[in-house]
Figure 1 (tube, rainbow, N blue to C red):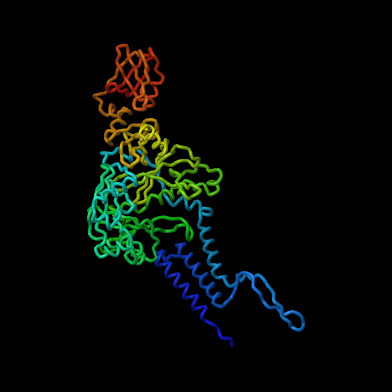
Figure 2: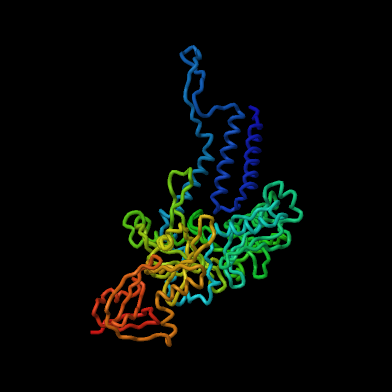
Length: 559
């Protein structure tokens, strides 16, 4: 009986087990059959096992080899070179790899377009009812993450004992803090040795940035031990993974409750199409970085202070599935009938050859929650929106408003054009309701990232633009241009009939105003584009004006 050499099998098995253990520790994959990353690790481990076993046996399974072959009746041997392709030894890892690919393909949008389109439930709604006019400008979140980073770094830079050991994380989170929008970011260890020096006391605070006052504050807290910038078992994601080894997790981020206590939140992901396809949120894990306590919540039970569970990138991806595939996959490729997508822009790395579309969205603080909003466009790629999507990042509730108008990038360009001589850059806007008018509001920054001006742009008529040094002044000017103040304060509204003696068009700060002058040299004006009936007025016409002071609210020719 031939003795079997078991060393190759022990060596190959031990090596594949070590690879699997290291991969699980380093990458922390969910031990869940719906996780394709786990399947890939298993496939690679099987290949490692077979390859090492064959190498340990001295076998050469691929390539040209010299073999001896008997020839003739006398059994003489002759050397012969042949190409060997020993695929039979690798059948098991090849089968598991092919199975992984098949499961991924069968769960894709190609075969499940309708299922993907139904993942996000989108409810048509009324803009004026849902987005009531803001009571105060302190509810409007305008600051982009780049500006928040600059203010946060500046605040920490003034604290010498903090800046020497810690950095401010670049991952700012937009939250609703006691009814006000605030951006928050935890400190992080400035490298491995800083972690070693400070791990006993932990990270001692976090940064808050007020997007209205454009100010940052450092908030001290108890030492946070379990954070993403820690190492080994104190790494926040690895720590959560140890407690919940089978859950698929995503979007680990920093938040605070209404008392200012810090937490880390991770979304729990479920795959809903096939084995690997589809993606939605079924709940969240809350980690107390001070004590290490964790708690799992289902979507229906998530506390109100948690703001981000259905995160913006996922909502945008789900809406694109909804907008692109509800009439089938083939329609999304060819006819593209009724295909829609969220607002995108193109961003590329310097080293990348091709640009990739990236979803963009803003934030609205509403009813104690943070909602993301984004424009919805047709896939034809024009510069206009056909509607807006508003989605709650805590509950996943999504609403669609059918409002045609300029997309966000066009509004940003219009605001920049208003002060083009200054070279300011516009931030991504927020969406607000001004007396029933969907309105973009945004900030204009200089080259150093400092906020210089605020701007409002009418969604439906993006040539209506106002700028000012403060939010209040900007909105007041915007209302004045639209004639809203005169409508709300009826005692200041006057009706007058005049005979037009002269019409003048005058540019003021880049805006064109139409002036009507009567026979007694009284002046009445309106911004071009806000009152189309004025374009039909000629010298000598008799018109009835509704006006507040000299600002025209309405103009009607008298027959």
